Length: 307
Image (spheres, helix red, strand yellow):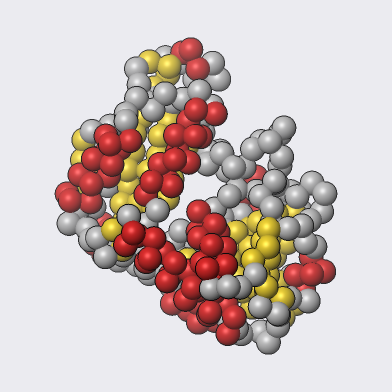
């Protein structure tokens, strides 16, 4: 399977071969970085994570990411065992050790920790939570924005909080991976997932927006993850005096949209040109999407300057 047109795709960078990975306080060459087979994250996917972006020496929305991380940990009774400041210090140590200042994607991962035996019971955890930080040089493939992505609607649905709360940034992503595999096999880049009622929820790794006129619509988030880039795009567009709605909408409204795009930490705003074999709008990245992207960057830059 090629990842060249994936919504998560990026340009190869030879510097990544020599990056040091933060593993529980130690900085280890990537090919030597490892955890125990008894770690909760490996045994059960019992953990939480955040994806962060470093640009021009600044980590975008760091405090918001840490807010979500600690909220997620609290919701699953996971004791991170480090303060916010200690996590920031660990991130900065990793960036400094790799001489990283720009164009970097950071994966901050925390599992419940080492277990005495592979089972579900958290009372069998030995010691404190496992902390992993992987920082890599990642530039999204330019062709994704130039040509636009192709989406495919999966038969796998998203879930509500009574089944599995997708607003929890959990290591367990198997239903999303299953949806993506369907999309890949259908020749698409990313999977669209519907909620249990049949309304559009999100894509498997990104949040979906449709454009009607100059209004941008995205889901309410009742049955999908609430992306920080999604929120920033909404705030940035509204700051321009434009209309952004979080609402229920259908596949039919997607097919008849003027433009479409997805949002994520790595790619920011990425246009969509085709969905389920149907051309969206003019079939090329559109002018309103470009304006949304510019508004997002302006809003982000202003917020980061203010902080």
